[in-house]
Length: 127
Image 1 (cartoon, rainbow, N blue to C red):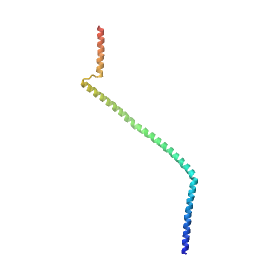
Image 2 (image 1 turned 60 degrees about the vertical axis):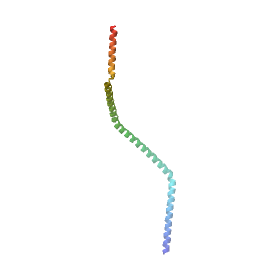
Image 3 (image 1 turned 180 degrees about the vertical axis):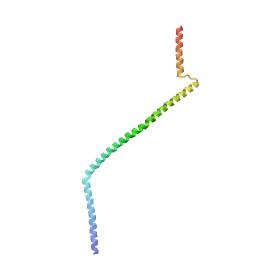
Image 4 (image 1 turned 60 degrees about the horizontal axis):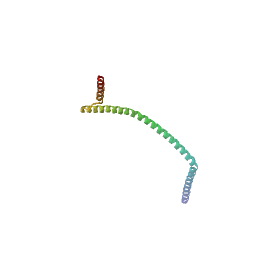
């Protein structure tokens, strides 16, 4: 009886191995048959995913641009105001320095020019 068990166990092990082998061959056969439609399905899913990703990227980009524009606009205005203020301060400082050095300002020169024109007219009128 001991030999019958070994023979039965060996036979059932061989049957199991053969069944697994056949199942593997069946899987390969099914994969070959369905590979074309599987590949087409995967490609279609890839195209769909790519379109969704691009649409999402555009939406996120537009939202980010709008938010950035909302943040940057006040900063630009503030920078322009500061630049104007600094420009005025620099002009005042330069005018003060030139005044201390005795250099006449543009308005001083224009006033002097107008006075000279008026005096020239008076001289011509007296001749």
